[in-house]
Image (cartoon, rainbow, N blue to C red; front, side, top):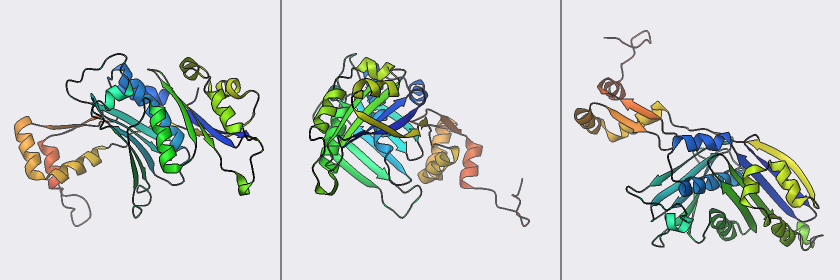
Amino acid sequence: MRDGVTRFLLRGASVRGEIVTLDRAWREVVARHALPEPVRDRLGELSAAAALLGATLKFEGSLVLQIHGDGPVALFVVEYRSDGGYRATAKLREGAVIAEDASLPALVDAQGRGRFVVTLDPRETAPDKPAWQGIVPFESETVAGVLERYMQRSEQIPTRLWLAADGERAVGLLLQRLPDEGGQPEADTDGWNRMQKLADTVVREELLTLPPDELLRRLFWQESLHAFDERACRFACRCTRDKVGDMLRMLGSDEVEAILAERGEIEVRCEYCNQAYRFDVVDSVALFHPAAPAADGAPTRH
């Protein structure tokens, strides 16, 4: 099965939907992080949710979903870009003890201070446009519930999500009620309620094992379903050695030299892909004292 998001319409019921399957893309994330199973699966569900919401971005940029916690997990974060690339990570507190059956609130809302953050950032292609950010309290037992409450508060669009993840796949199904056209009543006045009830029959094992087209047929076999768009997803981290070098320049030469004097080298590891970037004394000189170009444009050499 290919990693991607399929968008569809349930004609006559004024309902649109999306279904996402992350196979290889999700396994790329799993392979880079040694996470307890409850943390891994919740990160997978958030990844599927980001792909579902990100597939409808109306700009070239990124959607970032974050759950900030006050429990053993300090942060879940997923970034989905309009080109289908995504990356994800979770940050555990030092010494965190996580039960095998830990719920989402137990992971991130132990003291009631958890919060959910959505960021829409077009600045990669439109630097003059500011990022938009929405923050809501943590108010659900599940990742799907958190997203549904956010959509209800911010977008005011009736939305339902069904999410599942394990070590191999992350899957999600989204349904949204479409507004009535021209103030006319819906042809199918019970369509939205009926589609929710049909989708509520799906179980986790079906989400994780059935191909998307087969799952949609099983759920909506009596409905007029039209799949009209498929968008590929892939794991793609944006870290580079140059970006790490820029970060070290922001620290300043004195700070960098002090770290080098103590440790001999600086290692910076990307929190998303776990790639390590190492800088020694020679690299530090190149960062803060780049060779000046010669008269003919070639760099001077010593």
